Length: 420
Image: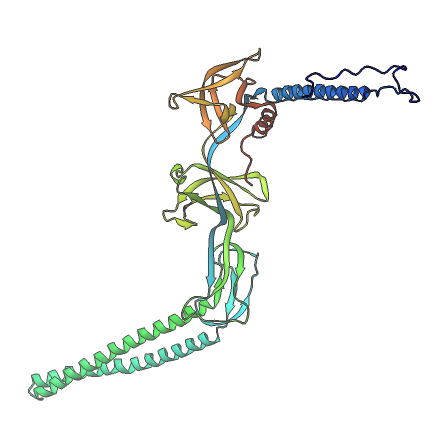
């Protein structure tokens, strides 16, 4: 059985060494290398712990809560219903031909200004002039026949008088008197029939002369030629429908036809103020008054739209047909009043009480009751409870988000940007 205790090996002394064998020193351990590794590990641990504490401190600073504030400012505010629409002339007329024939001359072009009653086109009148000559000749023939028929009446009346005298003196038979009465009645009937033919022929002549007048086409209103459909030399057929030659429009006044959704149409009333802006003139407003809401709507993409119309003057002709307008129907507006962002207003008791949070001079907050007025999607009027320059709390968030929200609030301070 092996010994339970390890053997103790005594160091060899020179006396114990075998004769002739040199003495050897024991091997040294790598202590220097281990020391370096321990030192490196310690440094890494210190750096890691320091980085962890630094990251925790950075996160704590990053999530520090801040409030978004904005100063109470004085300015203008309005609440309006927005819509889009097209511009059209207040009056425009398609001028056409009422008689058939070749367009002999066209005296206007697109863009020309015309006055009411100005000659703008002529149709070849040779055929109608021939019809007039025929009608006049026929009427002359009827007049000649009328002389003969009236002479027959005079003769019949004289014969009747004579026969009555003869019958009274028993010098003629009663049958001769009867024949004289019948002859006079026939002559008078012939005159009446001929008179009817004369009236008919006079009407025909009158119609031909009216048609001759239609060969000259005049402007029905003062305005601008906005379209020319026919060309000189073109044959116009007016038997089925009146062919259009030109379109005249009154551009001194333009009508805006705005499409209003069924959700907003109930907010409009006849006589309310309205204005619009244009894509090419974003800084200019054109104002008018709502004059008509058409009762019949249209449906586009399953959306029911009603048409609201108002007129604006256009003396400089800057407004043109079919321009797209961004329309605003003003429900309420105020000038030079205190306003704050809508996000700062808090409604309590079911909308009966309004309040805002105000930043005090020492950095704290206090809640104030206010009286709101006109409100739109961005800002609200404050009639009492605040002073110009007070800092109201709009929202809260991290410092990074707070600064972004502050910049966004500043951008919308002047109200919603115009769509055009």
